[in-house]
Length: 355
Image (cartoon, rainbow, N blue to C red; front, side):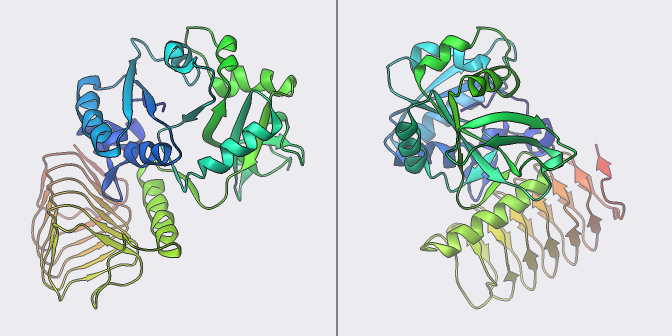
């Protein structure tokens, strides 16, 4: 799992925690991926880490114990791109078995059994999941045949060549490591095109939802897609009740007043408190947050241990960092508030950053 980046796109949340450890649906982002790997029989997960390695190791030890897998950290001393970390972790990946590679920002249903079966069926060196997008001109498009064999890649095409993009989830045979030098290398720009030329790279269309949740608006979209996916399946994780609307997850240790209304598309974290008459919609309340009486939180992310006063409005993709205190009767419209701030005046202009 490639987790080496600094998480700048997900600030201010990543000012408090490395991005893989930011909560998504009440678990660290990376724990969803590690659990999916364990579910298909993976016994060892290697994380290519760079930022805050000691914090990462401590959290990963706890995740390893909970999920029941061995987690090995491969630490970069300089940023190694998206392929270099594989060369760095070569000793862990050379046992003759295929190995999965994940970008740490991706959320989906992780149908890894199907990916493994398809990979073994065609016998080439690598397989990547691709996902369909509405506006391929924003992305690098993967052009492949009906059998999945990738012909070439087109970066941000201005004329239509296809609508499948790299989903950031791969499986490779260990022989791919012979292609990767021990230096900063891009797997997408330097390794994949050569593999495609030699017909050693195949694409499989990812079923279900997909989202790169590396920035706040996409985090909220990914959360909505995740909740819809849970609702369509067993729905065991979802919370029900007279004051719940649509797909909602409330942690068992959270306290929600019966007159508060939650949903649709809400996640309430451990130890959160939602007071009387409050309304929360399309938002994530991270651990320890308090929403005061008769306040509205809409389409926003509220960071750990933040407190929103009474009769407030926090909306418009606002993001509060850790330990932010909003005074009573304040409106925050799309503001980005760094950790440990007290806000006593309304913010009406979206994108305003409070440092």
